[in-house]
Length: 269
Image (cartoon, rainbow, N blue to C red):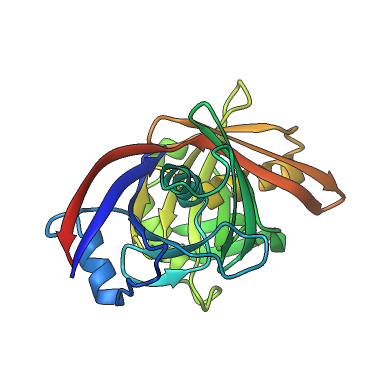
């Protein structure tokens, strides 16, 4: 099967984007993994299908796969790329796209190369937790911001040996379904530096949208960092997270950042 694709990235988190508004393309996990392979395929952290709408009021459906071929509920940086890609394919009104994900309905607004995603509700928040691995003991928070995330604040985030440490958290018995692991440090200017080990990629990625959302919420709930919160990611961009808070209840949660086309092409899948 020959497929047309667009390679995009959101703050360095990169994706293979496929227009499937006709609904004819169905990919196996093996095909997805092959397409995302950085040596033998296109290379990406994940693959996203732009599918036809299945819910009332939606313009389209976002189907997201990690690089290992596993389908997961949502991806924040991917949702921004999805919005840009949808608009490029005539979906929405050119400034706004309503779409559904496996995590629930979402709305996105486009403004001069910046995309603001209204995130699905955060849930399963656990604060002031402790976890021990072979690499040491971690004070952490856990929550689901579309997918599962652990957040660990560190005084020197650059010193974290992120692949072994992140992997030990990701595969810990405490998380039967696995989790993403985020290490963060609040700078003197209030900007949070974030590094993320992503489940399904099994490595550090240059940015993780749902991860920075989890970090921002944790910083607000446990360190009283005021919103909106700016977060610097490995790819060099700064993302912005904003929300309202009532006690530990989070509402009107948004993620803002860029989405860019890298190249287009055709590939055998």
